[in-house]
Length: 183
Image (cartoon, rainbow, N blue to C red; front, top):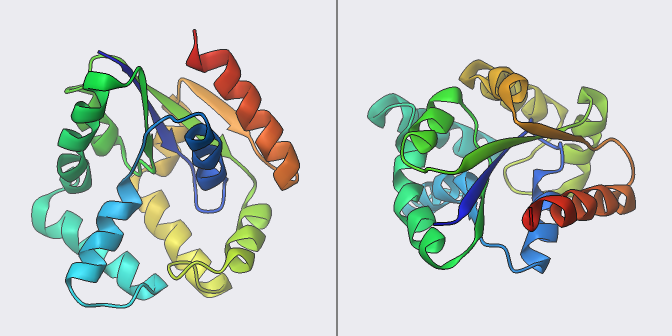
C-alpha cells in the first residue's frame, strides 16, 4: 500500500501551489475543500466566503469533526491501491488527522507556513469565490484556528516556509517533492 502526505496550513500559505507541483508529477490529490464546495453546490448555494464557511461549520456540527475526512476516505484508499503516494489537501483539525492516521497505515503531516500579512495579501489577490476581502480573511483565519490548525502545524512531521515569490514556492515545493517522493 502507498504513502499519504496530509497537507495543512493556514489560508494563503501555499497549499494549492504545492498541490499543483505534485499534480505535475502525476501524484493524486484529494482535497478536503472540494468536499465542502460540493456540499455548497448540492445545496444550491453560490461559492462565497460566507457560504463555504457556514457549510463547513454546519457539516461539522451536524455530523462531527471528522465528517469531511469520512467523506473522502474511500477515495483515498482506492488511490492507495494503485498509487505509491497520495496527497490530502487541506486537513484542518487534529480530529481529522487522527481519523486518517487510525485508518491509513503510512501517513505523515506536512505543514506549509507563511506569515499572516503575506497570506492575507495572497488571499485578497487570488480571487477565489471562497476568499473574499480582508474581513473575510480574518473570519476564515479565526475559524481555522478554532478548529485546531495551530496544533496540526506544531505536530507536523515536516514543514516548508513559503514567504517568497511564486517562483521561489515552485522551487521549494519541487525540491521537497524530489527528496521525498522517491524516499
